[in-house]
Length: 246
Image 1 (cartoon, rainbow, N blue to C red):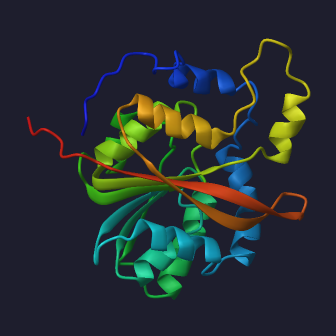
Image 2 (spheres, rainbow, N blue to C red; image 1 turned 180 degrees about the vertical axis):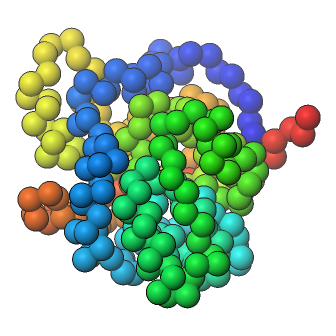
């Protein structure tokens, strides 16, 4: 793993990690596990191979038989098609019901041996990840699909890198959600600038000394009110350099 410590700020004088931590005053409060448990039924009705999943996997280009950590797997948007393509998947999520539904589908489709589900919060510390079974270099690739609205994005990227031997890939929204827009109207002067989440993600990675590749995925998304709109997601990927063995 690169250890290019460029200091707290980048060349523009912006500490992007600190900026992300301040961004919580603008971005919507993330839903808790109970909220996602309640939404699991809606996700199940819309499950199946999606254009989003196909594009994500085509961009990812995992080698045949690669092992993959799917952090924030939900009910298997990516875990299931990856398993169908011959990959072993560690599917981690903090919603018990989402994982139950993923396990039920995996059993029904004959994928139980390929998908291992684990209950885990993305925000938990590395020691908690290890206790759950995610250790250094335990998979070839680590992914986080539409699940990066975490407390500390820098720390999240570091944990994904620790788990992966070869590559990390995440998708982050390129625009504000309706909830974000509503919150912006209530934010007082002096708050952080209104910058889409993927800008933070790319600049945090650059500040970490990484050189990410960015591509885009257009996908329909249905909100809690049943309204469908087109969202463009930034597919951000980077190679993980070999870690020094101690």
